[in-house]
Length: 128
Image (cartoon, rainbow, N blue to C red; front, side, top):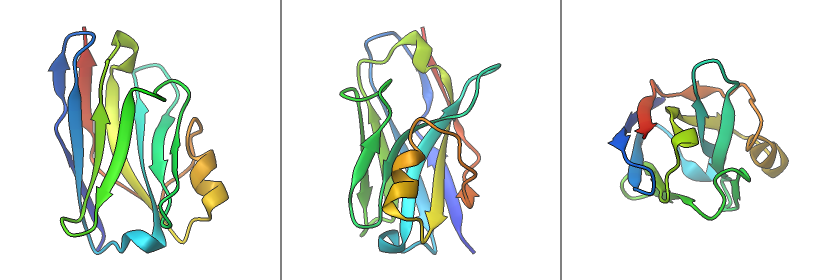
């Protein structure tokens, strides 16, 4: 069955960097929209970055220019490089996957709060 396992969260000072990784199983990336979303206490869920099966990438305005999403087909891993972190980036970060999503759906998943077909358990990011 499909599995998503995040790692790489932690605590960092403002201006620092973290790299999140999502190890996946039973996912063929060309058939999925892969993404990262976050949720902070008392706030709505926010999609921060998605990568469409065909390779198109989307970022929310809040992270554009600071975060970079990528995928490694050989290692079955999706990553989120986060630079210039701000206290407002503090949240639980989740890796997610949606099979057969259209490129439009994948784009709208950024900034919004769609219901993903699969998601991981999350990894905490704290910026102080």
